[in-house]
Image (cartoon, helix red, strand yellow):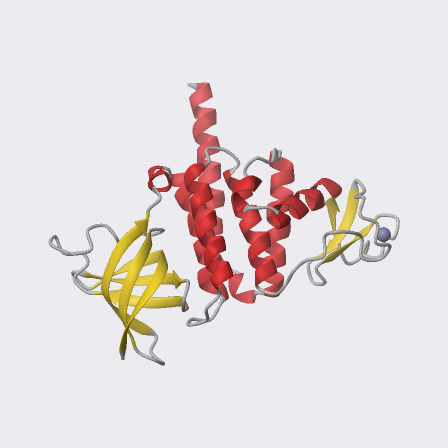
Amino acid sequence: MSITKADAIIMHSRKQGETSKILRLYTREFGKISAMAKGSRGTRSKYLGALEPFNRVSLVFYKKEGRQLHYLSDASITESFGNLHAQLGKLALAAVACEIIDKSEQDDHSHPEQFLLLLNTLRALDQHKTGLRNIIRAFQIQFITMAGFEPELEACHYCHRPEVDTLLYFSPNLGLYSCSQCGHLKETGKPVSGFVIELLRWFKGGTVANAAAAKVSKSVGEEIDTLLLEYLQTHIDSLLNLKSVSYMKKLEIDLLQYKSNEKAG
Ligand SMILES: [Zn+2]
């Protein structure tokens, strides 16, 4: 057992016994780890709110090789996202990014590029007021690319024509599309509008923060969300049941209902 430091993002935490917490953390150095924070819920805890979800903390812990659960020794906040905690919708989106990371990779597998992607996603959600769903869309396409399943979006796979038609056919399985002239994937692919492919190119190549600026209608947004989720789930089957995605959808319905009630009243 050795005492170790790490730069970590708290993905979620759950209560353990009367006074402790078990944290799921994404660290820059070791990838995902679980850590027990003893006495962290007591009124005189030394952690003082440092262990809230989505905080970035400087972590000191006892690392035991081959063990699933490590023991926290100290944690101090290096970056917190105040706006994120002030809005339920932002929290729900942050939870989507964390759950995708949490469920997709094995523990103790370092992936600094993905750590930065998660960090930049939380920052962008914290800082932006609009286009928040686009931030998560950009996170998803960049995440799946880093995970080794980069989709081919630059041109039609068959004729190499980069201009997009109104209607294209995308194969989640193959991770590529055919234009309507080639029509190769007409039977097996999913019909998708050219605008969706153009947006995905942009989300994939830019920063997650810049994605917030895209103007996406509700129907195009739904088309992108369905396509991205199917693509993720085709290649990483541990992502089949994402609680945070169901919650995000439910929350949106509730918000819409709330708005329409307000109008009616
Ligand atoms: Zn073609």
